[in-house]
Amino acid sequence: MERWGNIELRFRLVPEADGIRYEQVGAALRLGLSRIPLPAMLAPRVKAVESAAGERAIRVRVVVSLPLLGRLIAYDGTVEVES
Image (cartoon, rainbow, N blue to C red; front, side, top):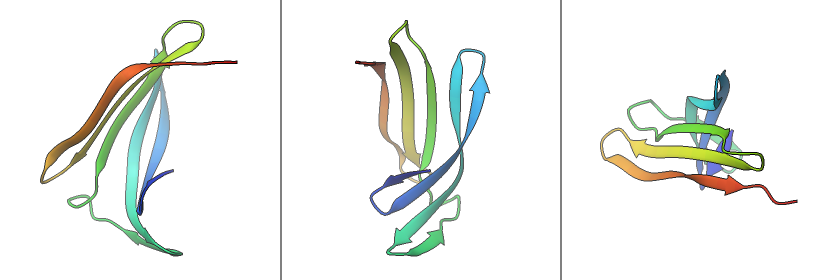
């Protein structure tokens, strides 16, 4: 699960040959302790993949979109792990 402001996104982690794919399985609006599931046509959609990029680095690819508006943000880069 990940939260972005009042939006809660739930994922299933799917192992792949070269990394991990985050498969979105749900979205909800959080208002205090209340959780209101969002219908697919209103929910943000996230596509994300992590893979190894050397001994101490991870390649991350993320695309966030809305069904009626299209792509909101995208990131494709390498995150280096520090001690």
